[in-house]
Length: 95
Image (cartoon, rainbow, N blue to C red; front, top):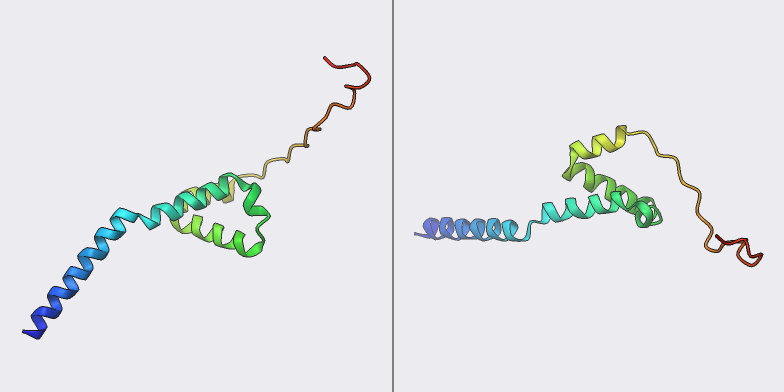
C-alpha cells in the first residue's frame, strides 16, 4: 500500500513538473535571452568577463548550430562613430 502511494505521488510530481516546464519554457527563454545578448552586443560586452562567459555558454548550449556559425564568421570592421554635432554648422556650411 505504501509503495502504491509513493508511486502515485512520484507520478503526480513528474506530471506537474512536466506541465510547468512546458508552460514556462525555461530552455526557450534562456535561448531567446542569450540570442538577444549576442545580437545586441553593446550591453553585454561592457558586462565583464563573467557575464560574457555566461552569455556565450547559454547561447552555445541552447543554439549550438547558430553558435558554431557565429564563431566561424569573420569579425566585422567596427564603424567609426558619427559626430553628434556638425562642426561646420556655425560657419554656415550646412546642407
